[in-house]
Image (cartoon, helix red, strand yellow):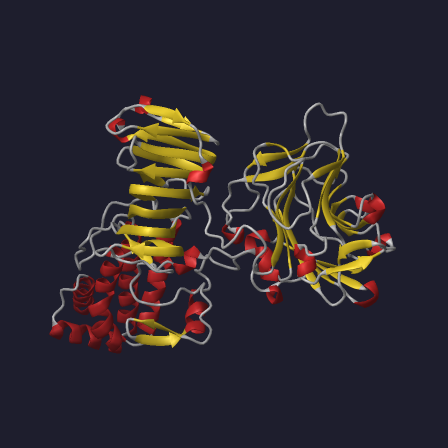
Amino acid sequence: MAQDSHQLRLLLDGFCNRSLDAAQVRELDTLLQGDAEARKAYLAALSMEAELFSSHADLEAAPAEVSTTLIHQQPIALPQAARRVNWLAIAASLIAVAVGSSFITRKFAQSTVEVAASRTAEVVLAKVTGTRNCSWGADARPFEYGQGIAAGETVLLAGGLLQLTFADGARVIIEGPAEFIVDSRSSAKLVSGRLAAVAPPAAKSFTVTTPNLNVIQPAGEFGLVAGIEGGDEVHVFHGKLVARPVAAIDDAGTALALGSKEAVRVFPASTTLARVTLHNELFVRSLAPSSGPRDGLLAQDSFEYPAGPLSGQNGGFGWAGPWEVVELDEAETTATNVVVDGNLAPEEMALGHAPAVGGHALQSGHRNRIRRGLGCTVGGVFDAAGLVENQDGQRLVGRSGRTVYLSFLQRVDKVADGFYGVELHRGDGNANRVLCIGNGAEGAGYGVTSNFNAIRANNFPSLGEEHTGVNYVVVKIQFGADNRDQITIYRNPDSLLSERECRPTAQLGGNFAFDRVSFANFDGVKNHELDEVRIGVSFPAVNGERDDFDEQLSSPVAGEFDAPWQKAGSREVAISGASIGADVFAGLLAERTPFGSHFSFLRR
């Protein structure tokens, strides 16, 4: 037995190193078929090999050619995507053993290391997530929507707009003509041309260089110009970054930290940076088809305003006018309805591809209410959508038989601290408040209330436990006959795409026709914050699109299969030639998979 064990070890070592000849493969196959202990040893060896490969292979900067033998490097700190390879590779090994030893030694031995090596060399570092009127030079490779880009690949865009999303969440929109090189999962070089980039908090190590300028540690949104007459430039729209001339890369004293609304230029071969005027209009920062109503979205305000008072701001679309202060905390000496930098959207949500940059509304006073009317005039956006009807001499959103959705992000920094809420009104005055989502109204605690409707206080539904994190709220209003409307509230919904997958948090009946949106903050010492107000005619319209970039990337693991977090349905998952049901595969991985619902982080 000792000799057999020694021989098995030699065969397993040779198998992992791909040095077995045909006779040795048959010998290993015979041992595995006749000895359960041998199969356990095989599984342990294969799992160890997968562990070593996934832990020590350099996935960020794979060479153009990789040896077919596994090269074990010194351990390095891997990003989350690389750590996923660990359990996926081990799972692939487990399943490979289950489907039969003959298949393993003849098929898996020939393909596992080769696939792992080739996939490492071709690991997708960025993906094309948007295009508009792209054109390419005669010798340039064209890139299409959904296509992956590997390390060292060059994008030669002759014209149009190309959006790339990197594996760490950073996103760039390149404007042709431009030359752009993807270096790694978190770095790139703009050789010439113009781009706008977003670096969310997760992309902490994202860097972009030009021939003359390094952009380091960006956190926010910025624009970059390279190869223009007079030098390269970086413009910071929101957030911060560090700019450093390439010619002075070793001289830390030449680096310059930039904040929002700042811009600099570096001249060729120069070691100094010169401040210049910020120019937003130079850059295309979104590939949205229009800046107005579209695809069922009728009104939106993302609070993309300069930091300062909110009153008088008139951005977004679908509104009848600017934000107007209704009640103000006169005891305060500074503005208390303001816009501050930073988007409230949690990083994981990526609402409508909205990065965690930009602005949001903040109420710091405690006798504050600010309001904005909707475009309900004849021929306005809501009238054109067939949603407006006359009630009590007012043109209101509320036509019988129609459904409207409202969504917003909301946060307070202290719970059970007096009244606050996002409100729907019909005209002015608290008596016309048809809906309030917040805390303290009518003594009902954290929940949904209505002053306009004669509903007993004990019928005001709760929204669950109040907390100081960001809440994403979707309100569905079904307008019924004789003003018998139905409200359904989804607090932190389970899905942003499918309403059927969401569990209602609260429901309420009454007359909820409205023509304006308010938010208020009274009593206590808390701050009340609001962001991403959207109104539309469908659930997806007010939720935007998810950014499932993690699902779209190909993981460099031993074998070809669909990741378990993709809904494969009844498809089969192929592993080096073997097929098993996708549901079986997902079940095998259930205990190791770190992915649950995309929005499980929202459940409190």
